[in-house]
Length: 247
Image (cartoon, rainbow, N blue to C red):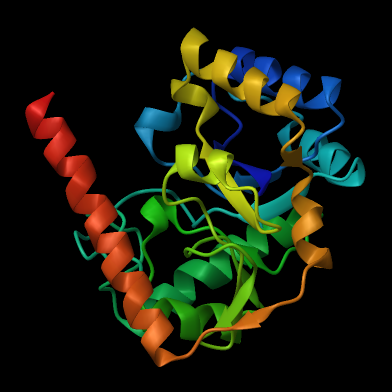
């Protein structure tokens, strides 16, 4: 199994020290990731350092070096507890809101990207939560790809191409098949142990640049497969909540 790297919560005011530590490890192994850039961060939990004034120029430099940029929501501010179509979390910036509101948010977010010289058609939903209104609004605003879902190859569903994330990292690492999956990282909250595990992954030879996804054949997922994904996502969410209660 090949492992692609996704880094969430990229903002002008993130923990730049941890971001640099993460980036240095990737650079040392010549791996380029997918990064989820928040267009207008209003999530206080992500505001950890003074905002970097050259943020957008820096993101464009990373893009030009092969880093893949996704639009990570709009403000990263959770507005509902609707889990959406992929219920891996219990909150959402988008799911449960009327179409017109979601369309307005996505349109404004895309405008910010374009005003700062960034074009992308890849969407990354905060807390992995989106619904059919989100998908309709995304399509209307020129998005065709989503980083989410479960599987071992990119797949097509709801008229989008999905690039799957791992259900369980240990299973993906043990899998010797010819698939590809994404490991999701949040550098802001990583500790020394997390960085050590990332280093082990990179040294294992299993990690590949995110653009490797784009060379893979896209599979079709029927309605039955979509229902199965919903069940898997819900089971993962419940398992996480159970561990929290026990811990």
